[in-house]
Amino acid sequence: MKKNSTISKLKNFKTMRVATLFVILIISGILLQVNAQEIQSKYMEQVQQFSSKPEIKEAFAYIREIDDQTIADMITLTEIPAPSYHEEEKGKAFAEMLRKAGADSVWTDEVGNVIGLRKGTKGEKTILVEGHLDTVFPFGTDVNVKQKGDTLFAPGIGDASRSVAMIVALLKTMEAQNLRTSHNIWFTGTVGEEGLGDLYGVKHLFREGAHPLAAHIAIDGGGLEDIVNGGIGSLRYKVTFKGSGGHSYGAFGIGNPHNALAQSVVAFVPKADAFTKEGPKTTYSISVLGGGTSVNSIPYESWMLVDMRSESNEKLQGINTLFLESMQEGLKKENDIVRRGKPLTVDIEKVGDRPSGLASPESPLIQQSMAIANFLTGKDPKLSSSSTNSNIAFSKGIPAVTIGRGGEGGGVHTLDEWWLNKDGYLGIQNALLLVLMQGEYIPD
Image 1: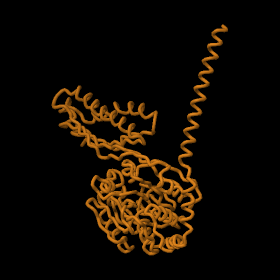
Image 2: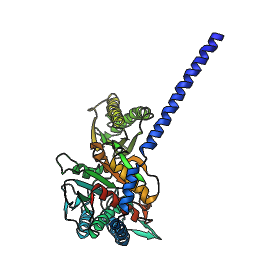
Image 3: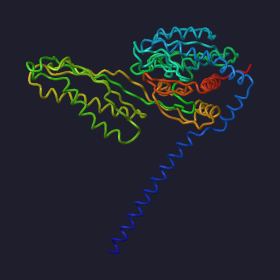
Image 4: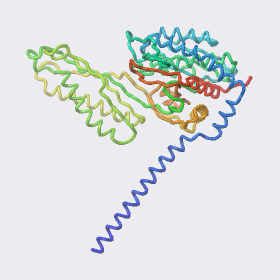
């Protein structure tokens, strides 16, 4: 008994050591994460000194002076329908605003991005600051802005007409106050940020052989303290199972695409569930289903849209492999019971591919973003990952950040979307400081 008791004590001791080590590692991880989000004193001092300059104070005051016009621009842009791939009319209105604001030149590129150039004194680098023109709402949606009290209601008013109006106000402020930078600044309205737009606007801007962009500042999201320094990658597919179709009784025995689709989902979900329980957050969703013509007909096709996301590219590729394997498994299971006719086929079309990436919390752009947000709001900034236009720059290792549009809002991507101009000017001041610091401000 004494020997067994000694062995038991040793086992308990080892277990306690392992548990203690595990707790220490967890605590260390948490501390590292917190420390990684601390603002270095040199950046706080830089922001404070920069903001104390008389010309910056005057620029801040000017932003508040033109606030009514900024709101008017936001309403104008909101009321122009702009589903992804159909941003042309809104782009024209935005381009005219950029011209009136004083851009040195304005153009629309091959895919529809609208760019207003403000030349730097040297122009050796180019900084991209942008908001996206497109919305998730189809043509026919009532996008007229309605006001109730101090709150504005309309689909797309916050996401992202507010951001695009801010771009105009930024340019207008820099021009009116003669704030010059060493680097060129592109004040841009991008296309294809939402949904199946798949970031095609910024993908074009960062394509191989394109004009080099030294940094990317995206305006999207909410509060100034919410700073996006990481891109959540996503893969999206449209999967279509196809057959000959026929009468539900007379053609019975032929392959049924709905059955194949159902079998593929049944094969995928248990694997995906197990795969996503551990490691970096990874998600999957069978999002939209379609196909079939009538209750008494075997469908000739069955299709679905699928969304998979992860902060980790490795995990995203892992669940992607499980998904593709499951589609073939479901097809085989249905074809194995086909009694007559040709076997079913499956088309797997990738309709979305957003890369993941991460900007270090210690990098100058992220440190400046945190320092500015803290200076203007007095709140501790929070870093996070999301799916925004910055994903592309993150994935390429180009300095990038997504900052908030300010004010207060809600109901994003719904018909009840709203925005309240509660200290909304702070969002523009926040963006101005960041643009000037990244563009290397040249004192007059």
